Image 1: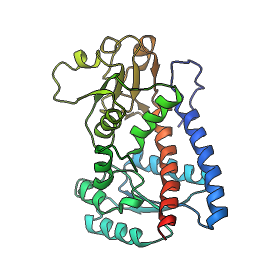
Image 2: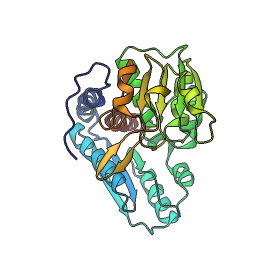
Image 3: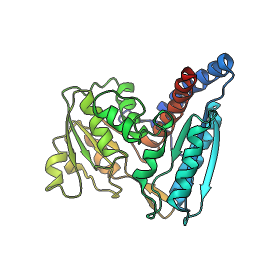
Image 4: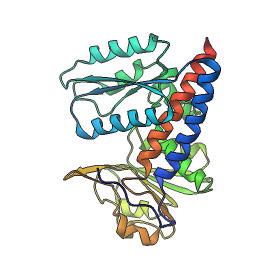
Length: 292
C-alpha cells in the first residue's frame, strides 16, 4: 500500500495520530507490567481462508503488537477448515494462561457460524468484544471489552473534545461489528440515536438530520454532500477494495466542504481500531493476572 499523505486539514480526523498516541501509552504500560509481573501480554489471532483484506488486517495487527511489546501468535487455516477445528483451537487457547487475548478475523467462510465461534471465546479473553456476554454488558451500560471500531470512534470524539450528549446520531449499517455497538455506545453517552440500513426508506432524509453520522455499509461513495447536514461530524467506517485501492462509504471530496469533522479512508478509523485492540490485550493481561 502507498504511504498516506500527511493530514493538514483540521476538519480531517487523523486516525494515525490518535492511534500513535494510544500505542505509545500501551507500550509504556506494557513495559511497566512486564517489569512488575514478569508477564508479557499475548494475543492469538485466528484467520481462516485467503481473503486478501483479512490477511492484510491480521498482518497490521501483528505489526502493532511488535511495536508495543505484545507477543502475537498467528493461527492460519485453509478455507475448507471446519467449524469444529476452529472451536477446538479456541477452547485450547482459552485454557492457556500465557495467552491473554483471542481474536478471530472476520468475515469467516460461510460454512462457519461466526456467532457460535464468538460464543466460544472466553469473555475475559474476548479483546474484540464480540462474545454475547460482553455485548450484553455494553447493552446495560457496563462497557468492558467492546468492539474496537466503535470504541475508536468514541476515542476520536474525546480527542476532539466532543461530548455526544443530546446530539442527533445516525448510524448507517446495523452489523454486530460496527453499527449496533456504535449505536449502543453513543446511547450510553446520552446521544439520540437512529439506526438505518438497507431497508430504510429515504436514507437521505435520515442522514441529513445527523449531528454525528457513522457510515458502515461497504458501499463505495454511498454518502454524498446533499445527504449530510452542514457542520456534521462524519465517521466513514466502510471499506471497499477495488483495483488494489481502498475506498470508503462517503464521497470524501464531495462531503468535506460541509463538515465540521470527517474520518478519511484509509487513515481514519482503521488505525484507531488496531490501537484499541492493543489496549484491550494489555487490559486482558492485567485482569487475568489479578484473577490468579
